[in-house]
Length: 114
Image (tube, rainbow, N blue to C red; front, side, top):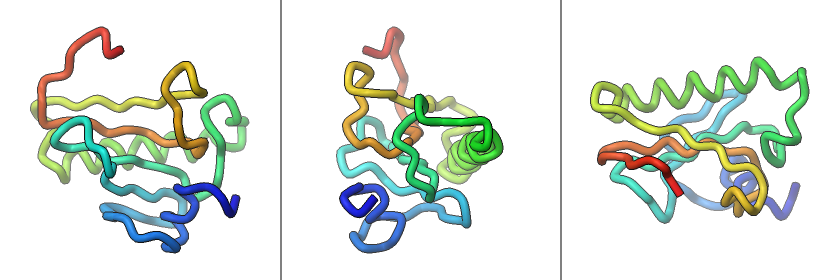
């Protein structure tokens, strides 16, 4: 996916503020943060969104959520609370079509979110 912005981050073609990476996951600070802590957690593999997931991605999804929890601990937002958001397609607010979790914390979150 040569035109995918997040693939370019994952491949270090475009600099970004990386906070975590391993063989399956990549995480970086959002350039337009909506909370004091706003990190995007993405799979290294290009997957458009949740609707594009298949059974072979089950382990990957669990790993991505583990990365979110680990980053919440590292960022010091675990005890107070945090939110993990996954948008799928335009009406839900997805603007970059590479699966990504938003890890948000450091402020009080309201409900409903939007």
